[in-house]
Length: 464
Image (cartoon, rainbow, N blue to C red; front, side, top):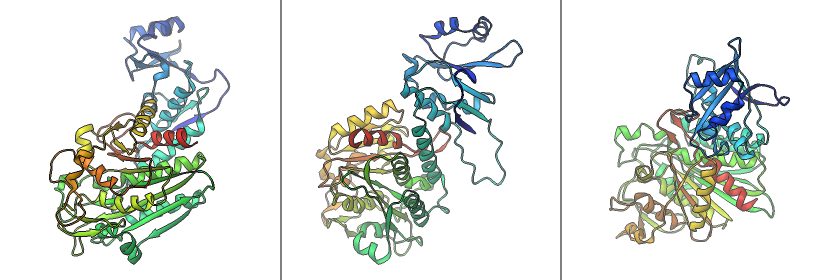
């Protein structure tokens, strides 16, 4: 298990950071025996390569972590530190290379995230991880590092939970625990109230024995800027009557990834006492097949009053978001953000690592992209191209929930949501994957809490 500790200056095993351009100077600063050892091992500061340095007895006297072609050590990201949880021998380490406060914070956060593992569903305990400690690098914001690691770990745990253990009710329980922990207030709309007030959410969840609901949480702060988060909480998506192929269902426990990331972001904001008034809305449903399932060709009236023809029941996420966004938009918050595992088209265009972001104001996406790069939490701005808006046309209703065109699926889904955000000037839509398909240090296969850190930084920069 990785930990962060404090210790007197000079304590701990030194860990040097080496870029290609700075490697020669680093070698000259090392004790001659250790410099000779590194050269004999062929260490060349390649990114993520770790070289242990012995003392005269053979014990570990230090280590060098390669940063590759980075221009300076201050360009390191949290993922540079993440591999160390498994690769360093047990001990207490310190970063011996001076770094900026931002880089120190990123290193501390990566150190903590590197030990994340999903083990709760195994009957036999996993092999104990190496017990390492990092002496907090000078200038690191440890409060932020711990809070971000905990928020991301919680979001990952929720996404990783199998659907038989996390349905709409359990997702509501998680949100209510957050409300209780940080002295908020909450209302959970279900049953007849949901059917009457949020008809699209009720329609999508009607076929499941696990009743749909809208989870509405608030943390009030008089006079503060208002931020509203909306997270797609489809706890399992069979595709409804337009049934998904079996292979496409394998990861559909993660279709509530937007809700989990919204919960993680809310926790981070609350834990660090962001000076805002926060609202969190989660439409929680299971899109199932049954006698009460909504059907292709149905027409449903939304909370906003717009009627929607159902072109495909597997485009359910935009339906539940529509009712929740309408509710959020009615209050005209200073910033409205929705997060959703919404379209395969976004993944086809950008892959699993790059969430697509859309906004009512393109300066918002540009600002988020800049912040995201600095915090290794990447996004990619996409256009709300109104030239595609007519693709949502319907012969029998105000709009269809899908387009007949095979093109621009992520943009058209964002344009559908835009129909329900008409009063709030600053709206940001995030189409994310919330999953790591391959094994990387700090990012094991499974859930990923995307955009949590980047959106936190955007909110703090804009609103305090």
